[in-house]
Structure formats: C-alpha cells, structure tokens
Image (cartoon, rainbow, N blue to C red; front, side):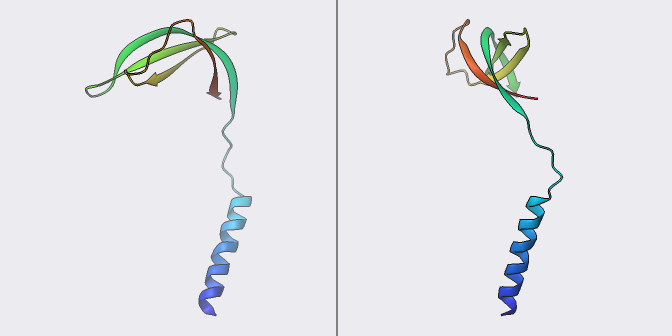
Length: 84
C-alpha cells in the first residue's frame, strides 16, 4: 500500500511540474531559401564537412553543416526551418 502511495505521489508531482514549467518555448519558422555557397570546412579535429550557406528572400543568410558524401547544387531552393 505504501509503495502504491509513493508511485502515485511521484506521478502527480511529475504531472503538475510539467503543467507549470517556466521554460521558454523554442520558436521556429519555415522559410524558402536558396543555396548560394558550398564550402568545405574542418568542423572538428580532422573531420571535414560541407558548410552550406542559404539565403532567404529577405536577404538573410543561414548556414548548415552536412557530411562530405552528400551532394548539393548551388541554386537549389528548399524550405528550411529557422530557429529564432
């Protein structure tokens, strides 16, 4: 009986903590972007990756990293998730 009470108390505590969390949310938007530049960079010690530079319609540039074995073409247009 005591074990059941402890489990119920922990479950209730977790439920109330989740409802009243003070953490801020992460906001992101989907925007259309064009791939404008591809560079090869050493991101970690002896680990090279491609650095992709994307430009949105309002001339904001964003970067992303991808492995060297992936192929991209400059001028490609796609939707990208941009965190604010």
